[in-house]
Image (cartoon, rainbow, N blue to C red; front, side, top):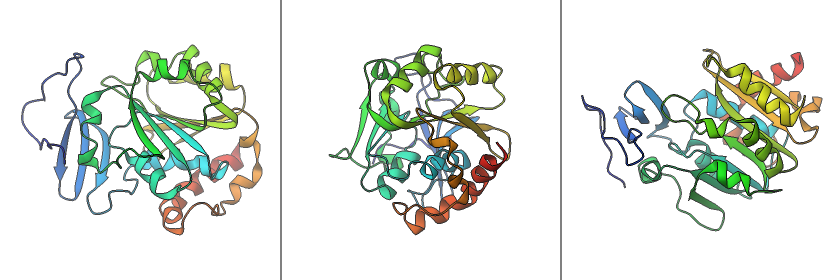
Length: 258
C-alpha cells in the first residue's frame, strides 16, 4: 500500500508541476483524498471500498438507465478511484480506461484499493485534452471528473474539448460531466457542451446544490421515456442496484419533468 498522509497542521509540499501534492486523510472508517485541507476530492469507506461514498458519483452512474452494458468506458480523472472501482466490479464485461495527468494521484491508487491494470482495466498517465484530441469512435461512455485546485482545468471545459469528446464517442455514446453548480461559468460550460451535443442533454443537481451532473448523448438515447421506469438493467447486479436506486429515482423524476 502507498504511504498515507494522515491529517497534519501544515499543507503538503507542492508537486513538480507547482500544484499542491495530493494527500490522504483517515477519519474513522472513512478515507479521503485532498489537494487542500478544505476540499475533499474523493471519499472511500474502509468497510466497503468499492461502494460509491459520495452522492455525485452515484448520480454519474445514471447512464446505465440508457446504456446499461457499455463495451468501453473512458474516465477523465482518477481521484480516489470510486467510479473506476464500482464499474470494474459491477460491469464485468466493460473495458475501463482512466486518464489521469498527475503521477502523484496515480501513486495513491493502492491507498484507495484501485485494481491493478489488466486486460480490462488500466490507468493511463496522460493529458486528457491531448488524448481525446486523437480519439475517434473510441468509447461508449465518457466520464469527465477532472478537477484540480480551483475547479476544472481550462483545457477540460473548452468548446474544442467537448467537440473532441463528441468525436471520441461511438454512436449513441453518452458523455457524463461533473460540474460545480455554483461556479460562475456554469451556464457558459453548459452552452459549450450544447454547441456539440445540441438538445440531447439534461442536467441533474444533487440535494445540497453542489454538484451538477450533465448527461449528453451522441444520438437520441436520452429521449427514451422508458428510462424513467427505473427497471434494474440485466447487466447490473442487485447489490449495485440497491446502492444506485435512490439516486436513480431522482434522475427518473428529472426525466419525467423534462
